[in-house]
Image (cartoon, rainbow, N blue to C red):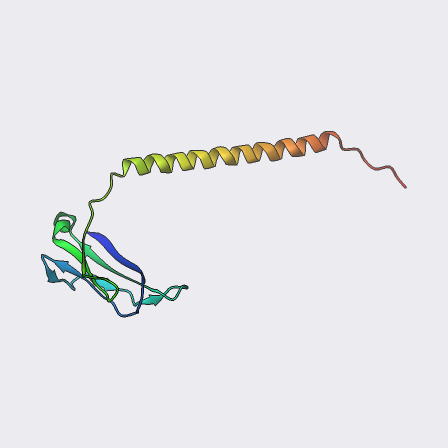
Length: 125
């Protein structure tokens, strides 16, 4: 099973009708709705999610009706992107972060070693 989320952002007025369809029919099974919430700019956002069998992904659409739309939207689920490029990005970030951490540690050690060499005890006053 996989979860898909339909997000609607930046709409006004508040009233919106959004739901999942399966083969063109309203589908309420395994659907979670979040209440409509305000944005800082006076618009609203809303989301609804659904858990489905990935083999049936092509049967589902997110249907959105709102006064600001000339006609309702029926958005098909997209196929997931290949995760291999993301893996390279993750590995690169981990490697880069690790390298930066090593540089910071070496810099701190060098700083403290440099100050220790020039240390002299203060004379008695």
